Image (cartoon, rainbow, N blue to C red; front, side):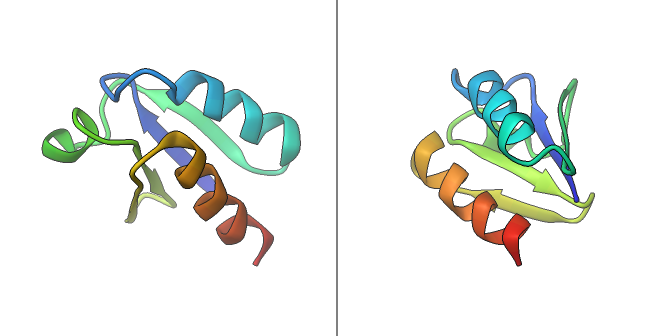
Length: 73
C-alpha cells in the first residue's frame, strides 16, 4: 500500500508518516511535494492512498485510525 502526504498539509504529517512506517514496515509511506489535492490538504489532515483514494479526517489521530483500518484489511 502506498500512502502519500503532501508537504503543504498542516503540521503533523511527518509525525504520522513516521508512526505508520514504524508500525507497518510493509507500507510505502512518504511525504511528497504535492498530492494535487490543494483545496483539501492545506486545511485538513489528508493523504492519498495507492495514487487514487483521497483519505481525509478532522485530526491526524483520526486519520491514523482510518489508515490503520485500511492497512490491516
